[in-house]
Image 1 (tube, rainbow, N blue to C red):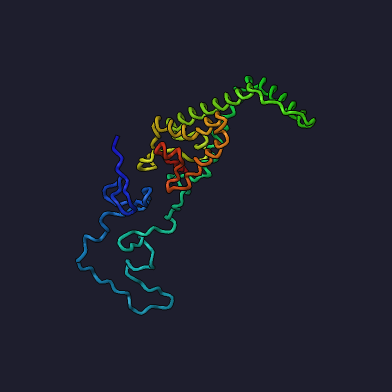
Image 2 (spheres, rainbow, N blue to C red):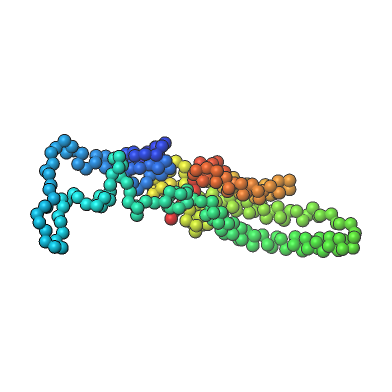
Length: 280
C-alpha cells in the first residue's frame, strides 16, 4: 500500500498527487478538479520570432466576411484564459464550496441529525420489541400506580410513594438501547464506513487523515468504538437519576458542536479524529 502524501497546510497550486506532469489546486481542505501543466504550452518557444499574420485587407463584396488570423477570437473562446499564470475555470466548471454541498466535503448538521434519527429507529425498535415480554408486568404496575395517584389527588388524599421496583425495567431498557447502539455504530462504521442511516442520507465517516476523498478509507475499529461511546453516552447517563435530566441536552450538544468548526466535527468526531463526509 502506497503511503498517502501529506496534505498541504495552505491553499494554492501543488504537485498533483496523481500526475507528476501537472499541478493541482488545494483549497485548504480538499484537492479540487482544477489542474494545469507544470510548463505552460508555448513557454519553450519564448524569445523565438513568430511570423506576423496580417488581416486580409483586400476589398470585400457586400456580405462577404472579413478573415482574421487563426489565433484571433473573442475573449474567453477556445482554451481557458490564463490570468497571472493561473487557469481560470469556466462557469460550468465551478463547483460549490460551501460545506455539505458536494461529494467528498464535510456533511452539514441536518443530514447527520436525520441519519442519527433513522439509526435510532433501526436498532431501537427491535430492542424495544424484544424487551416487551419483560415489560408487561411493569406496565400493569405502573398503570395501577397512576390510578392510585389520580384517585388520591382527586380526593385530596396523600400521594402514594413511587415503588422502587418500577425503576428497574426502564433502566434495563435504557442499558439495552445503549449496548445496541454502541455495538451497531462501532461495527457499521469500522466495517462499512457508515451506518444504515448515514448510507440512506449519503454520508460516511472517514479518518481525519484521509488524503483523497475519492479513495475512501474506513475508520479503525478502536476509533469507531471511541466515537460510538461518546455518541451514545447520554443513554448511559440516563441510567443515573441525577444525570438523566441533562442527558438529552448533552446529546444535542454533541451534534451541534459541528457548527463551531470548519470540518463540521462533532464531539464524537473530535474524540475519534474523524470527519463525516458526503458521498453524493
